[in-house]
Length: 246
Ligand code: IPE
Ligand code: IPE
Ligand code: MG
Picture 1: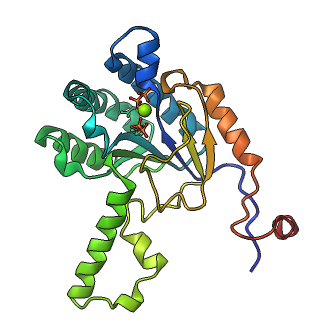
Picture 2 (picture 1 turned 120 degrees about the vertical axis):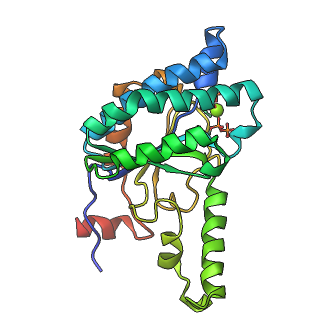
Picture 3 (picture 1 turned 90 degrees about the horizontal axis):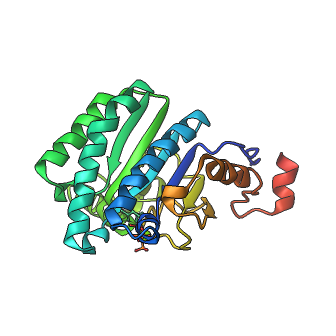
């Protein structure tokens, strides 16, 4: 089997948008101020990556562990999600962006769940880029969910345990219909996955950046894409094999 030549533009980029709290703290402001500024960066990032030809962008907005934050911060974040959807859905729709949510939405308020579904329906046929927003998402939750779904299919006699392989399993995961992320970006200086897309990141290129999310500029985004083009993706092969195929 020959290798595919390295694509210079990733088809799927995912981002852990980290550092809002520290950004606000540096300015002696409450953490919510950083989150509001973070929404502005999110808006710029969506525009930037869509213009760069990225077909799938997945953003970590709220993890299943973020419920452990102070009540005031959690409440503020829920309000900010609602406001951001009200404010930006039309604009994104006009740009041809399809918006989807991944994560356990059942824990959100009825009103927010309704807004989320409405956004997905309104933008559902757009094809410029798919924007996946991970909200109350956890990679372990995702894998357990898939395992539970498959166990259900086995107990209904729809499949046998022997039929469960990587291909069957991945289809039950969030983003099972999308290519796995090629490029993972984390801002804010921490070098960890924090329970983001555990399965889907199996072969992503990791790019860590010290910049706090509200400060993450277009030129920082460009640097991440440039760095990606310089990586050699080997998928277990040798560098010589990859060079010979290209
Ligand atoms: C990321 O920024 C946003 C969310 C987790 C919602 P943080 O709020 O984690 O910012 P830091 O890491 O405390 O600076
Ligand atoms: C990860 O950031 C989650 C999001 C960006 C939404 P955190 O700031 O919550 O991650 P940890 O707790 O530092 O690992
Ligand atoms: Mg953080």
